[in-house]
Amino acid sequence: QKEVEQNSGPLSVPEGAIASLNCTYSDRGSQSFFWYRQYSGKSPELIMSIYSNGDKEDGRFTAQLNKASQYVSLLIRDSQPSDSATYLCAVNTDSSASKIIFGSGTRLSIRP
Amino acid sequence: KAGVTQTPRYLIKTRGQQVTLSCSPISGHRSVSWYQQTPGQGLQFLFEYFSETQRNKGNFPGRFSGRQFSNSRSEMNVSTLELGDSALYLCASSPTVGGEETQYFGPGTRLLVL
Figure 1 (cartoon, rainbow over the protein chains, first blue to last red):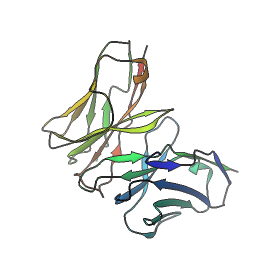
Figure 2: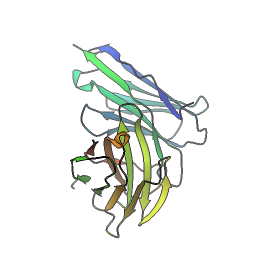
Figure 3: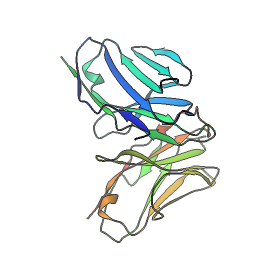
């Protein structure tokens, strides 16, 4: 079983709709969770970080964490064509260091 | 503040050669992590350095090594290159170590092994 799992997609969402991206992780002791966006040919850029159970909102983005279910998600409201990218879920499995394990990414396509 | 820089941006090598990649973190950042990204395996953690010490290592063979200098700049070396080492090598920096530290990625070095 992979440590961080994501549906590879592609996930196609109409412009203006809500895009929902999901991720599960295997290390129950993980404390820090991140969502990165990666455009083709570019390096990953941080979208959201979340450390506590519940929701965290930043503009059009909402991250949701459920440690009991070992599940983290990212919602993108009012999806725009510029949101078309690969979204990487990342989990830091070491609370005292930085050992981040990435999922394989979900390719999101926003159709006009 | 300048971002993470990596040199060179592109590199072509042949099997059996060795290569050294360089990473300069964001000013003030002391932690540097390295990742390998391939279409088949995705982003995989190589190692992390903080204060010139390797703190974490991923599941890569000993051909992959690194070091960090006193100014926090880091180098990664791959010896006896194999075709499968062709990948995008990404460096990321953070102010310090710890579970909640955000990592900022550089543009990457794209390595092609022929």
